[in-house]
Length: 322
Image 1: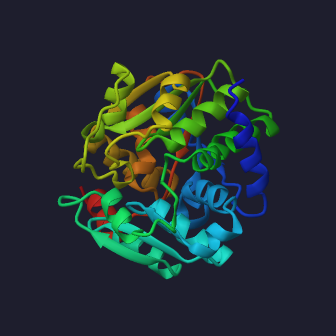
Image 2: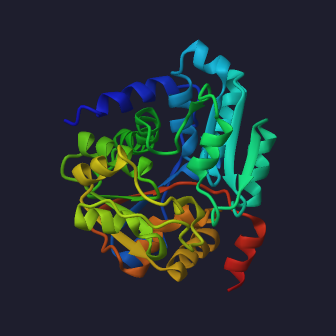
């Protein structure tokens, strides 16, 4: 068993009474269409509307009293920003969050609503890491990275662990496949470690947009690739590359990476909305996009992690009206 799994188990204990136990849902017409049993882990019903709460709470709550007193800095296009802001509000910690100007308005407003000091920047001109370094000039603020942080990864891994345990408790057969979106690889790393620890024979597949395929290229070549500012509607996957921690974890624990087109992502958002009455942001629909488009051929029992539901109304209406 992967030694990192103990961190996921520890995160699970820490998150009790803090994170929601999110529902597992099915769609009979989808199962009939695909000839497999598809189960969705609906992290769009998590606090802040995304799985990111898990990792943020696990990482921030473990900081020392001195670190908390000095404050926190983070950077994110949205869901990690909201999660860090909420956790800091819960724990009484001051926080500054660096966000790109093109991040969804709903995510910016929520981050500010939780009391965070938001610093906006133009990703075409400067990187978020450079902005954060300038803001944190004296280095006193603790940086909570969105994915390249072991305690963040461990927290994200609790979603898959909870998913598998829910299936066990309800008497379902184990998963044959587990699909998770990939941006910087935090969720995918945690998902893969948790899944392999519980279900050694389950195939773990990471899904990326075609237009943000740096992790897929990295996985297939064994060399870390970058794709700065990718032009994809799946804003949660616009990270330039995987990190120093997540890249080796993905190489070691993930079985396969696949990509999906922008149209496939939109089709999945529409399917979830019209057929399952679920509001899911484009990044959260990548797993279903892979199944509907044929990028992944489902077999047996398939787990799909829906990562979040934070989508601007204007973006959702344009997707639904296409």
